[in-house]
Image (cartoon, rainbow, N blue to C red; front, side):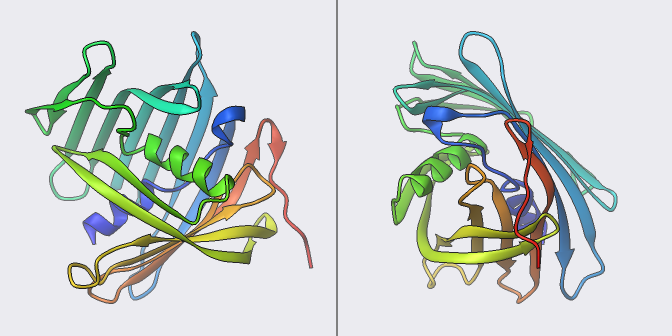
Length: 238
């Protein structure tokens, strides 16, 4: 349950194309089947100086809370992470992760819950936030299958995804045309399922996420409201 919650909270929203990144903010609600759990989250993207961007995330659920922040820059439409900070409290033991990306020295350094970590840094390696931007960019570009190398705590893992098609999603902001994507896992290794929907007409903002855990528990995350480049997200009304 804890791992499922963290994965869900990490995927609340995605911004615009890499070639035309726009500031955004989004609010979400979460509903769990089988469990009386609900929560909210806020995510935002803002431009900094020197062609850098900052992605912020804050979430709360009952007594749990977490914050996540990434800074990155773009180089020929390639996302280059610069810093990553993650902190969680209220779910068992607290957790704190820090990663710093030295592109000149081609090294990632930092710590995971107080333990030092170090990785060789190759172009294409992403942190737990920036891979979401790359996923969005690839979906918008029409790709049908995607694979990313992601620093996940003290490990480098491969995240695979594939596009399932188009679907209309009913949100509190209205009916939104979306691209449906699922995370690909080896069924002999994991029975977990994750499906995501990205808004076609709103810079591919994430509007819905549905997950089924290996124990059968299900939950759904849905867009409440948001803005992209200062414009309110509005879907069709019945």
